[in-house]
Amino acid sequence: MVLLLLIILSMIPIIELKYNSDLYDKIETFNKYCLNNDISLINELDVKNSYMWNMSTYIYDVDNLSNFFYKYTSGTSGTSGTSSASVNTKDYIDLNRDISIIMVDNKYISNIMKIYNYYLNMSMPLFIFLIIFFGIQMYMYVYFDTFTELKRCLGKCDASCFRYYIYTLFVYILLFIIFFSILLKKLTELYADTDTYEYIMLMKEFDILLKENKAGSAAIIDVIKKYSKYKINDISYTTIHNSEVVGELLDIYNSDTTIIYENNNNYKITLKNIDKIEYYNSDEAKDKIKNKVEDIFRFIYVYIVFLIVPLYILSISLQGNYIYLLFVIIFAIIFSISVYNVYNTLQS
Image (cartoon, rainbow, N blue to C red; front, side):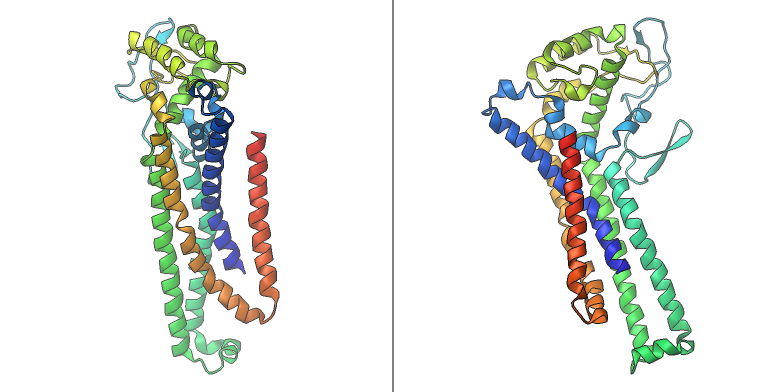
């Protein structure tokens, strides 16, 4: 029963990822349907109603994004700084796909790959349990003759029979470790092979400029305000995906591509990928995410195979109708999580 519970917990991040991807896709589809696919009206939708925004904020730790910006040393007291401290062509550091804890500015912080970390944390108890359980079984095998109750329980099965059970258990755990490693790699591809990181970091730059409202960012902010309706202090409530907004922002950006916009924390903000705003919200960019989510969700069938073993053992052990109660409990857990996620999504 413990093994069943831990396997189900490990499945939850994958189920949630697929569920949220489908949900945000449906929301965007319904918005287009309600607006009769009028491109001018669709362009006026807030950023928070777009699939790209919702998925990016779901798979990244948004509150931690600012830690990934490079910093500059202000050369003047004017409205924009000069990059004398960094020669990097990017505004922010690249994602590290290999570890969940990274060092930035001599301090350890969690990687912003939220779903990767979520799956890792939810699966680690299962991994640890299997290793400990295998160790216990190995101990029982080595000292088999001292476990009289075990020998009585096994009946005709002797130490050699128990050895085959150890082999089977080892293969089961090895398969899980291989599966776990492959799935973690697939999750990193969701970040590496899509445009979500560039997109969310650009949106973060806009968000910083809006909230701090520095004089050097006035031209950018004025354009965004001109086309947005309310809550202008938050980028998610703007209509920055509008092609007219993009055109005016590009005119400002192209007039001086060397500007590093002043901000309270000396982040290197140049709006470098501003020319890709429309692409980030295109079907091509969104399909990259959907395809990766589909690839990851296919591994749910492997989980079903892993569930068969403990379910079979439990059904033999209980020898009654308790197995049906177990299925009801599993269904209730998954249903409760789904309702909780729907409520949170609607609230936002």
